[in-house]
Amino acid sequence: MDHPAPTAGPSGSPAAPPALRQRLTIPVLAFGGILMAVMQTVVVPLLPDLPRLTHSSAGTVSWTVTATLLAGAVLTPVLGRAGDMYGKRRVLTGALALMTVGSVMCALSSDITVLIVARALQGAAASVVPLSISILRDELPPERRGSAVALMSSTVGIGAALGLPLAALVVQYYDWHTMFWLTGLLGAVGVAGVWWAVRESPVRAPGRFDVLGTLGLAVGLTCLLLGVSQGGQWGWGSPRVLALFAAAVLVLALWWWQQLRTAQPLVDLHLVTRPRVGLSHVAALLTGFAFYANSLVTAQLVQAPKATGYGLGLSIVATGLCLLPGGVTMLLFSPLSARISASRGPRVTLALGAGVIACGYVVRIADSRDLWLIILGATVVATGTTLAYSALPTLILRAVPASQTASANGVNVLMRTVGQATSSAAVAAVLTHHTSLVGGAQAPTLHGYLLSFTMAGVIALVAAAAALSIPGDKATDDAPPVRGGTRGARDNALEGA
Image: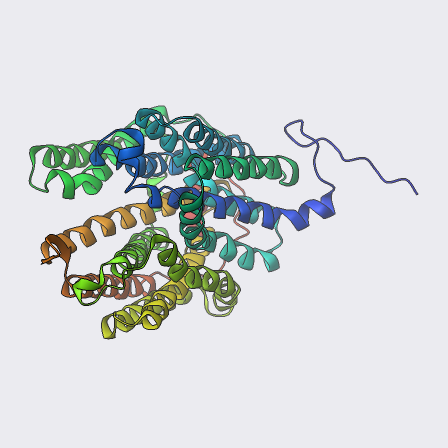
């Protein structure tokens, strides 16, 4: 019997047969999320050697991380809004393509300027998760949606746990450019997979793109995150950092005023300020802070020399392997998060996850000298992060209309990013303040690490309190149709909330 030929996709590309496409949608999108997280971590093992390899200073090399952070923070809400307006699959493919181009640029050059520009391009991939979650909402039936969204949100931790040991192995045994050739190849596979297997969603939010709002958000976030990320290096009281923070406050205040008065804003602040959405964003920021301290402190602690009295002197490869159980745990526990959210509601899952994170830090405070307890504590934190991160997009999906899911989840991911950047700065400040002389060099004390754990654990408890204060999260996935434009979407959202 003859089988029908594959039909053309919405962008003119040959689409996969419907049954096959349904089976491949979740794996392809999850692959993109894991790849995005891998891309963010692969440069970490290179940082100590990049000044020598690129003939530049350590301060300049740090921009290979800062550029990705800034670009990702700015582009995530922007590309989320573009996805809602012009097509989520189209924008997702473009974000993965930019990441792939950045990898190829890194593979072809040893010039630090080129590397920084390339890493900024890779920052566009930060929008992969919110765009993919929005696609899953549009494409999957309700009974499959929860577990798929939970898995998609967990790919951030899974990819980070896989990326560090993978990059360390490549750097240790091959030329460092090989790592970027590998990520470039994987990126090309991701682009092809999305282009072939993912259907373009028909759900759109028509209107005019807010260029002024985009520029204002870009400038404000750049000033804020640049001050946070470079404050430890430049000095928190230095004129540059103070000027950046002052500019951030001024620009973001003007941006807020402009967004409230724009008919079709980049970010619907009337929706953001609703308790169900706004408190979800606050919880995302606090959870991002609590989660990120685990990776930062664990990596430094186990690599500290044994002369410190607490350090294990592990290599970067061994350090990555210590974090690997946490990544596996995130993969295994994402279905559990979906089941808890289905039976108890995502705000309960979020609060439970934040509480588990706090318990993980209790384990870290109790004993941070034995390797097995360090791994156990880090894995418990990763488990709590899985529950929390998997619940956050579900909260957003239940509180906003379908036409705004990508932009709303983009803002939520942005808040996680701000939390992670703040966590990095806070941990650095604590460890810099608590040091001792070891072998002629300053090294953080164990007390400094324990204070960092305590700080992150307290923030996790605050995140749990914020989660429990979110109003009832009765599912509203089948939101009423948008009545036209952003104002109509806003009205529907307010009715549903």
